[in-house]
Image 1 (cartoon, rainbow, N blue to C red):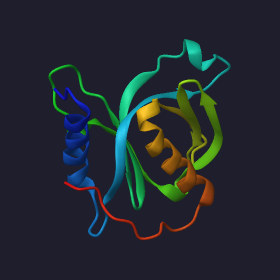
Image 2: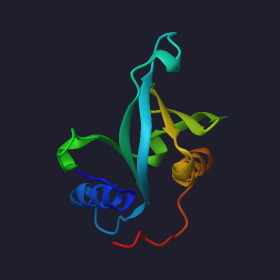
Image 3: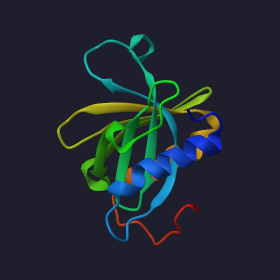
Length: 143
């Protein structure tokens, strides 16, 4: 069971590594509150849950958080799609969270909420999806 931020990050990297294409690398990763937005029910009353997000140079990958005392595995992967299949609908700064509303190619809208210490990852996702261009060469996360 991941306890600290470092252990969570290591588990995200370990679970993501088998699905990476050759030359693909992880740019950033963090825990995120996520839920699907459908209907007219406000997000406050939705069943939001903690998930894990990994941003590679090509894709956005979302993992379901494992139950207590269980490791994060590649089977926990919910979404692994290229950046181009997503569009940024809205960015909200709700104290203390940063909320991104993202729509995929099928029209499904997902709310991602980042805590203050994870806002850097949220801002990176927002800039990737709003620019819709190829990523500049960056450096991979240290493993």
